[in-house]
Image (cartoon, rainbow, N blue to C red; front, top):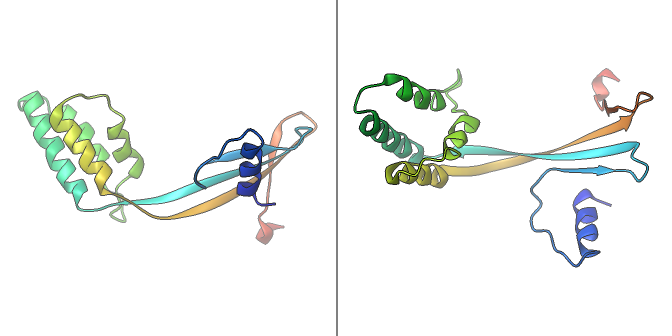
Length: 147
């Protein structure tokens, strides 16, 4: 039985329907000796609206600090830095959206970030664990090349 089928079957036992196949899940055996973890990693990219968001944020910071403190601008610049391959850190950009700033222009910039997000693919990872004799869950290596 597939993991998603098992989750849906468990939900049906309680009259519930769990939507979507996204999400991480851990399933343990009845005795708790074995466990499987499913992780789903989505590939996220940003379109041109990210530059619009950056411009709105720059304007907001300039207005907020009135040109006085460049340290705050450096924090936002850090979020928009690219790596050697020219990629922007999804984690840092999405971290800006978690900031509880209630300014209208900031919220508009966060909306532009949200609108710029595209899911370009996903990968599912399965990890198997087994409880060792010290009662600690250890990951079972499935690396066939080193087996």
